[in-house]
Image (spheres, rainbow, N blue to C red):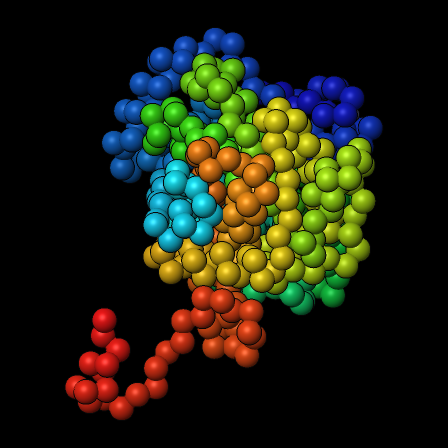
Length: 421
Ligand SMILES: *Cc1c(COP(=O)(O)O)cnc(C)c1O
Ligand SMILES: [Zn+2]
């Protein structure tokens, strides 16, 4: 593999630890698939589906040849991430208006979010280079994932978390895994900037999504979906967009599958942002060529609360290569969609539900036809934000369309019988 600058095309060795080129552009990993035999790989990936106790049982490392072929096997730090479920439900078909819709639950990852798909690769890479100290800035999921893998790798994690508009569940999870947590008065974007300026002098290996190894790992999400569906993908893949790493990896993974001949058509990608933090959607909708950062983003979907997504140029490539689209949804739309996903028995945190809310809107605007098929990527677990559940079901708001309240009742046969349908 090689690192190539996405702006000027300059190449660098894959041991380079800067995530930016001398020109300021972001670096991207370019793999050499020239000698690969697609049939051989498909066979290998199928065989690995029956593995249990090796790194290849992981839904990321199963596809190692497409992710990090050079990494020695004994450097892999894994928690059998990936291997997540694909679901559908009558409620979701009704809600979106599509008869062919499914949800890929990356929320079933070991730390409860899709960040594990990329983090296993970043931490393995850092560890293989001899790093003992890892860092990230996070609204809570990246930090939980990093803290978990760092502890498994007997390494340290130093994480920066904004002191407001985040979910306490995620911070507690991060602390419990043993991270050194810095609660900062700035935003996520401030934390990213601090690390860009200081991480190298502090000797810290940075695990934010500008780390191209994370992107390589996150490509496994679409590999696994395609693999489980016998290399037949739906027409649309819908992802939420915050820092835009998921959207980037999705486009890249699709490109890999297409260039290897695993799929003969690239699905279209829809990126859904929360209205209060939607600089990427605004740029696309207004046909602009530069992203204008939002200094004070706010959305209840804390994982999407990012005003200056560092990887927007990479996400733009995904969008172009897949003939994709973007849309934004309100917090009320997100929370109602979440209630439908939860009630289906699948469950997710608010940010993930932006996908279903966005899909519903794209169908109602006829951007997506009712005859088309779509898959939404659910990014985080239902227990990642219990305050959101409390506010929606027990709160005062009259925006909770699908509220499910409990019944304080006396415990007699007759009172209970009334409720049973
Ligand atoms: C990180 C995260 C997102 C946003 O993904 P990006 O790659 O930053 O766009 C969405 N949902 C959840 C649950 C996340 O943890
Ligand atoms: Zn450059």
